[in-house]
Image (tube, rainbow, N blue to C red; front, side, top):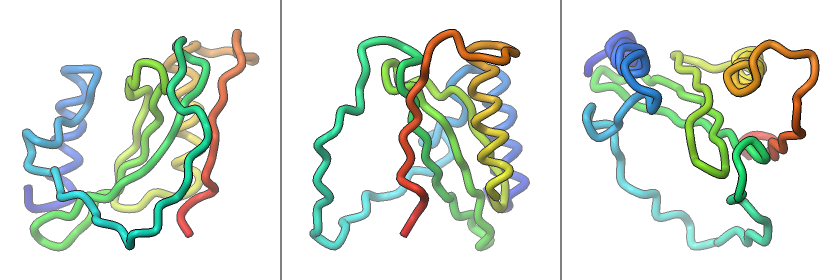
Length: 129
């Protein structure tokens, strides 16, 4: 994969054939774990849930291409079944893209509705430091 267009094309073509979207290993997109700086952040909360659509999480990542360009990916996951509900990929992701991602996630799970049939938690870390 040499360009952002190649990476996005691979993401789009794979996502149309399966629910899981891109398979990182198939496209040699896996990277080594970050060793961190040794300072551990304490986690006292509950992440996993025993029923679907009770809590979602979101995150983003960046994939570097061989030519130096980068693809940025944002996604939402269900904390129960870890299913990727929705995702967005581009050479840059703005706040409008994230709002669109959240709307798409709701519509994917519940369809077009003015109110959700059940409350859904979506905790936020308020972005990167």
